Length: 257
Image (cartoon, rainbow, N blue to C red; front, side, top):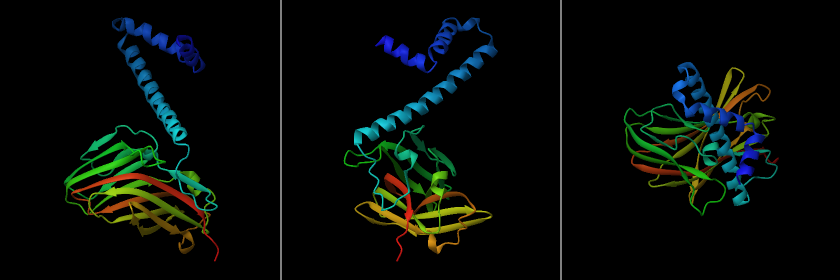
């Protein structure tokens, strides 16, 4: 086992670096403050990179254990993605009384209009009965004097590559709500100097909802696409528990009539 571990570290060029750090930390008092500070920065940077790689490896292992990603793709679907917080660990795992805006991690940002926001957010493993996502986001909302809570997800470049007015974009949600709350999706597409915004309300059945945006009815200039993002909006979330167990965004050409 020791030889296997050494061989693994050698392949990634880590052995010599670890040996150098180990020797230095055996007598840290002999190091100049500048050298110690530089070495500490290198260690922190290496740890951050290793943590990110470990999260990717863990996600891949979870996907292989499940055997499939659980995404219900329509015919001719040419792009689909489960947002990062539902497939990889984020750090920190929990947030208490977040302000607005607040970076959750994984490209997800929290917004709200409350001046008094007694709420918490944490990333939890999904229940065993749910296939596909590895994690979910759970909100516990208490005193909240605002009117909305929203999650903003930047869409990757792949979502825009080759996008035309013949496409539709759909958002699939799996959510458990302690109390009824209205949920909306707003698609924002920047094309040149213009911003197209389309709003749809989710209709849920057994905790599963879908919102769809038919781009044929939009004024998007498909030749000048720059960026796109999605707002997930919860109206009046006070005194509620919201467990968002999955969020998938996909696109496909719409069927000709």
